[in-house]
Image 1 (cartoon, rainbow over the protein chains, first blue to last red):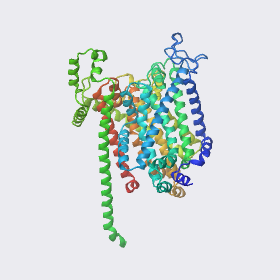
Image 2: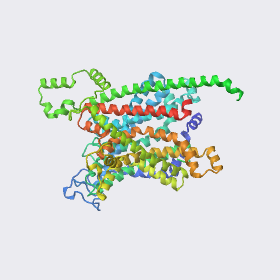
Image 3: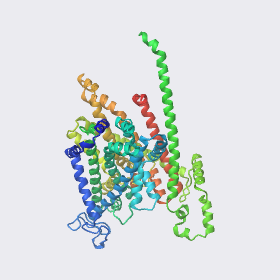
Image 4: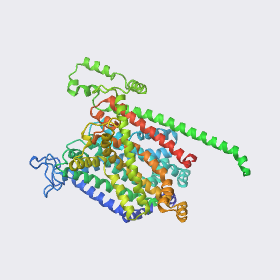
Length: 296
Length: 341
């Protein structure tokens, strides 16, 4: 009961009202479209992860180099005769892996840090906020770029670099609500009842900021995908020959005037991917946050 | 003269001076915070660059040649580059140099990093200004179009463009634009050597047009989204209804009453996006071969030039922190509500 009252004052819906959130998400056009696009992308990525692509994404077939789209090669082939459709799908799987690892890391670390900075006093708060400020002082892409090039090139490095860039964002979005939750009656009551701090944090505070974290996770996923692609395009991302959407666009840059499909396919896939995630994020925000409900 | 004016005069002045003291305190705190942040930035940049595999010696001579060096030669080179010093000494040595205006020297070109930065920074600033201009020119009208009828067809169209701006990566837009224009119009101003604004303004603006359009398109998304919700909020307020009721022309209501009051969030959002501009500049400068500060970092990273990357990243972070500080202070000046709270 008390949880519902505070949740309402925070502008988010939690607990027993979870079912209507899904229904509300499905009622909005952006939610429907976002779910559909994300589902298509996720299914194809899963298929590619299990090796279910029409062709081997890294096998080179020199006779078939730079073939236009055809029934055999749906999206054509690149300068090494590799199937662009298979490479795009495998690239999506790679991007998605990097994005999921990066965003999960930053969401967990950032939320824990944000909650601690909001809940505890100066000794805990000051160092967390200092680190957050320093990380915020860099343009995000530049920080990811410098971090990614500081370590050996692999997808793990990229994921960690992106995670470090997004930690401060999760600190910032969670700290504010925790500051007000700390002063709420039900948290005070839990304290008076003598519950241990860990129980208060995990049973009372965290569930109440979960909706905010979920929305932020969805939106961060789209940034993470874009960042991974940008890094690969700059030659500092996923190392070849593993297919990456960014490096496919980079390779296509010199080929596109004679073979348009080399850029069209990976480009379209990135855009569909990111549009889907953005729509889903918008839809979820509208569904979880009544203040955005009508005009969002 | 109302009787209370004279009586309240003194307290008014006190109130103002009190506000000023509080404001001064806050400003000092923000400035101190910014300086501390910059110190943290310097440490982070230094640590990051030390972790990069390989060092100045392998970067200059190549991995094989440096492996063939005798231990004596290696020690001499390490001493030459200062790599034999403890990291803390290296850090403060570097920081002292930077504060004295010595940003180091590029190993490849022998140019001082300060000179390189002074040449590159104005190019990126020009790019950022043009991109902001395009971002506002696209984002604000789109926001007004969307907000003119919430949830209608115009809103859908406006939001669709906003979504596209948010979702199309700048490297893709840049690459497509470059290929399209050079294939069908045989026009590629970037193919010639870069022209500086002051020496050849005509060619310079042609070369800057596409990069700033691409960067500005990405910037239009957050401007459009913030603008739309700010406009919708202002539109629903009583004074707008009053203005309409008075018979003020609709366009005048939209611009003088609604847009005017929605400007603060739009301006703030534009200021916040400065970091996006600097990061995006790396990508766009790379595609269009614009010799700005982003490209300087990228080339430095590829060639493992410690001095160049370290100092350039520090300069970028410094300008980012300064712009944020200025936006924050300016915001307090523009909006009295922030000052009061």
